[in-house]
Image 1 (cartoon, one colour):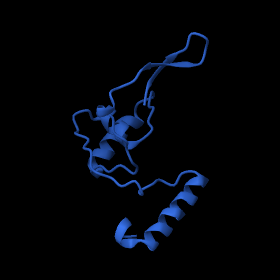
Image 2 (cartoon, rainbow, N blue to C red):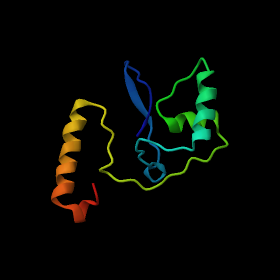
Image 3 (cartoon, one colour):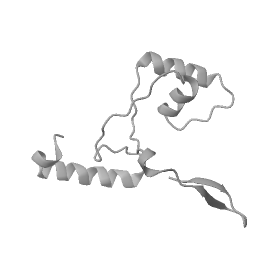
Image 4 (tube, rainbow, N blue to C red):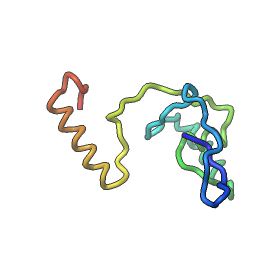
Length: 106
């Protein structure tokens, strides 16, 4: 992850690289209590400037008093969004069935 800025010759250039120790990867879906999600999205939908990419961003922007916690995840918990993701998911499932003691339950 880097911060970008307009480049001198057009395009973008790297403006800053945050310390890696401060970075985390996120997985989807993200979980929130129903009341928190409803309140956050209620406020978000009333905002004509709404720009949202995920639930976490909506809660952080519209309910900044809510704590958003980090919990451990699993690399095999993928989101199937694009056609290529289906092939990856099928491969993970085949591996899980071939080695259930190693990869956990399916």
